[in-house]
Length: 632
Ligand code: ADP
Image 1: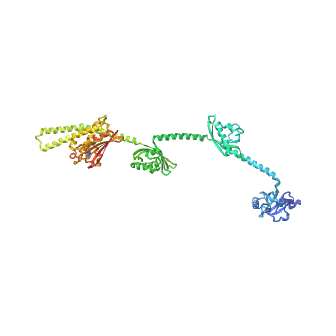
Image 2: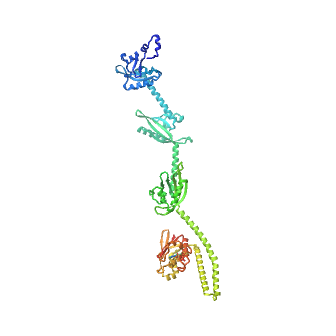
Image 3: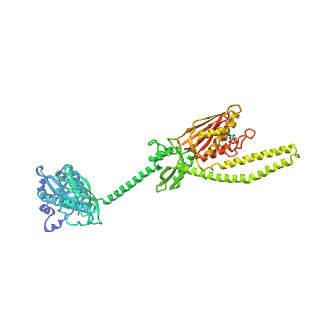
């Protein structure tokens, strides 16, 4: 040993080893590998180590083998300076190998030197075990206090109410959420006093029974109507957990969470849902279709029932793709609809438009009106396009009819003006012309040469023809003036017409066959003119080498009557099927077939007057079929 704290007593005649030997404490000096360098008398006495065995004896030989390395490492690491004291409590093998609890206090003696020596005291602690127990109990109690304080601070920092109930429902603990003081004294009173109503009490009782029986947490909802109108009705979630000690339920932890705001939102949501479903069923009844195109989700298209109905597709048969929808657009509208949708997806928030579709079931062309709404994400990229659509075919047709009616009114007005001009302005110069021709003939008959006479006769016949033309025009303009419809038997009308055409029929040898014809409400004069024109045309445009055979038939088409006049005449080229119905449109000149080209224009006007249509189908050299459709 290089120095000693008690070395200064040497001047009183006490040597270091003397004092060491007389210390009432067991002391030894260890080197850094744990070998005992020196030991005093007390040490040898307590450990019962014979002094002869001391040199080189390691203190570690007296402790459990498994502990040896740890102790040595601790000594070398913990005792860095003379002020660091290491306490080690271990089992020490003493006399006759019996174990004894000892407390080693170890401290570094040589901080300056490379060679480390430690001063070690040894104390038997077997006899202080009772104290240890006391100390341990104190430590456990302290830990309990600390953990309870921790629990309280947590319990009081959170909003839900936490109670501990004993088996009878008596409150033994209640937290003070957010530091709020509890009104009255909860502790020691029954929880049932605070439940507000019978239902809550029943629920708690059954939860408690279940908790005990199943040994698991139970929960239920409760509500409480407070007298204070500011508080009103509150809703709670009650969670109850059994507290188990020594395998028996000793009480319950009860957590009460105020869920009024959640409940209110839930109620609002239910109301909104009810409203929405009534709107949806309202929409169902209107026949308006609802659809969604999920742009972000890979072009998926969802249709509701009404949309299926509008497109004439059975539920489950639509393939749910944008392509599937595009296939059903009327071909002429297809390109513009695709462009429109792409444009809306890129640039618009809303789009209103209409287009035609082809119904899958009937193949019918229908008009639909659509309103599209585009939803975008924060970057403005379209996510979905939702919309509504409805069938507007009836409105479109009405609109079309209105347009046609307006056009017709306009045309009629123009025609009336024209008729006026024809009857007044044209007729009088024509009259003057024929008067002067007559005068010229009468006064100069003897002076006129043969050529002049022939010229005059051409002028005369032309003026007569011109008079006829003007007369025809007047007749045309007068169609529809008779405003009252009457019940007309078409069979009777046909008989009258055939009678009037007796001469032509006889001359041509024509055979006219009339099927069963209905009685309809019609403008009689006009309808007579219609059949007269058609029958006389069929006789007139006969093939020179064949007997004209004319067949008149009627067919009931549910909403209309279909009447056909079929002949075996010269026929008409298909390119003229429309043209022949226009005023003064003829396919032949006067030398071939006489006529003014106004007969079929009359026919069309008469049929339109009855709200119907007339068309022709024909094959050159075979014959023609004129079809009239009259609404019922
Ligand atoms: P028009 O008989 O005075 O020429 P229409 O208006 O009655 O005038 O007929 C127009 C044209 O339609 C006729 O010039 C004729 O070429 C053609 N046409 C009408 N009816 C028939 C028919 N039954 N068969 C063949 N051609 C017809």
